[in-house]
Amino acid sequence: MSSVQQNVIRHKIDLLNLAAELGNVSRACKVMGLSRDTFYRYQSAMESGGVDALIDANRRKPNPKNRVEEVTEVAVAAFAIEQPAFGQVRVSNELRKRGIFISPSGVRSVWLRRDLESFKKRLIALERHVAETGGVLTEARVSALEKKQDDDVAHGEIETAHPGYLGSQDTFYVGTIKGVGRIYQQTFVDTYSKWAAAKLYTTKTPITGADLLNDRVLPFFAEQDMGLIRVLTDRGTEYCGKPETHDYQLYLAINDIEHSGLKPVTPRPTASVSASIRLSCKSFTRSRSDARSTDQSRNCKLIWMTGCITTIMTAPIRERCVAAEHLFKH
Figure (cartoon, rainbow, N blue to C red):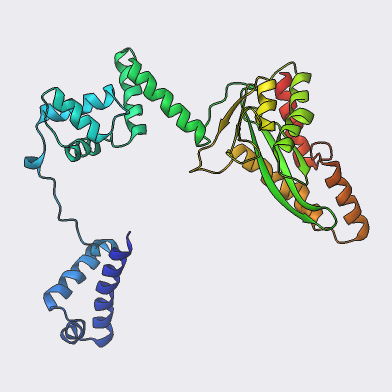
């Protein structure tokens, strides 16, 4: 319910309450500036349907006379499946070449009636059409599906087939320790098995991103006789740069690992990395950063300087890693 509807309902209820309080309908209507007919209409609606009945009914009704011809609407719907990546302006222009005249807004109206107004919905309609008819995907349709897949990867919506198929990496600012300085956590998560590794550093550079892969991730995959195919990161400076001079990019190239970056409009890691960061902070990092005694602080600093959360783990993290290793072996 919108705020406008809430205000309208409140005004009507105020009229009914005022009449009940004063015990005089005429006086209440005079104070509120409404007629008695209006009061009795509100009262009848309230008695029959409750508060929901006080919402003003939408008087707008579809007018079929303003719609395009059925032949034109069918042509627009068919073209949406033929070229799902085209926008309404381009669809209007392309149909004009075929002798079908409809404005871009008319195309949009047809899409709305047939639930085709977004690129994603048109792709769903295309997949359903191919499944029902067994039609062949044209080059344009394949291109549209590939574009959708690339967009999903860029926004963190991924499909993963097996361990090592895709790993996700992200940098997290942990906090500041007196005598040490700023602490950053490099986190890697295998998106299929959810196996995770993390290290703590005092800098946020391409070297630290590559060091986590070199020191913890790739050796683990090598022990399982597997490799890492692709890594998904954000577009931070520690992960992206000129391939010929950027340390992280060079390391990926040397080890034949593909790299995908999230779009700038979605500067966030994937859900698996976010969950791993939250778990490590709740179970490990934050609990130790609150240490107050000298011995606790010294031990905390040693753990941070050691820099590997996967070797000094609390029980929840250890259990998840053991489960992930079991999945790798089987």
